Amino acid sequence: MNKGSTGKDGQKKGILSFMFPSNYDFYQMLFDQAQQTQVGVRALHEWLISECNCDPEGIRLEEEKGDGIRLATERQLQEAFSTPFDRQDIYTMSRQMDHILNYSLTTAYEMRAFGVQADNAIMTMTKALENGVDLIAKSVMLLKTDPQKAEETIPLIRGYEHEIEKTYVQAISTVFAKDDPITAMKKREVYHHLKDAGRNMSITVDVLHRIIVGLT
Image 1 (cartoon, rainbow, N blue to C red):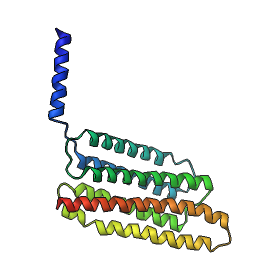
Image 2: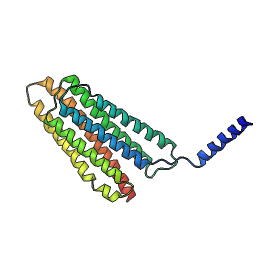
Image 3: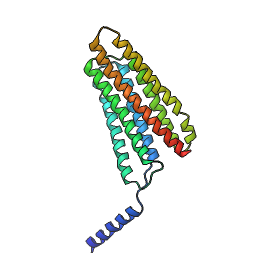
């Protein structure tokens, strides 16, 4: 009797799950990941300021937490019957924020491996990245309740992305003008990771803006 009842209960739950799939709060998921991106980029900035040249363990841990949030979002996207806005936008935005943390960690790893010290260009790009992801988190927080207010952050975030790009070009020009090609190549690798993080921030804000436009 018990086994039969359990089987029927399980079948009933399966039917109900199909008819009434779980609802997930994708606004909160994206906000959680945006906040985690904030924490990870801030960890990179603090690591640079410390000038410790130590293992970036703290950045790695924050990057792993970001991976966990991204994987949970992807899993729940597959399970969700409906989403508050385009599921491809949710997926893309989550992936791009994850890439920002990946490049933040790689920046620290390669600086340590190549013996590259933080210079003005590295600090400027990192601070612009930090400011940009702070605004992304603020904008995502407002998505559900005040998308028009959220839109006000968009040009500011793009301004920080442009600052990263401008700083990168100037830094590359300066470092290759010097008679030290080995140092130039090492620094180029580090600069390029920060530039790529800025590019991922740019894609993130483009998707974010598309979501906002769809909500207003």
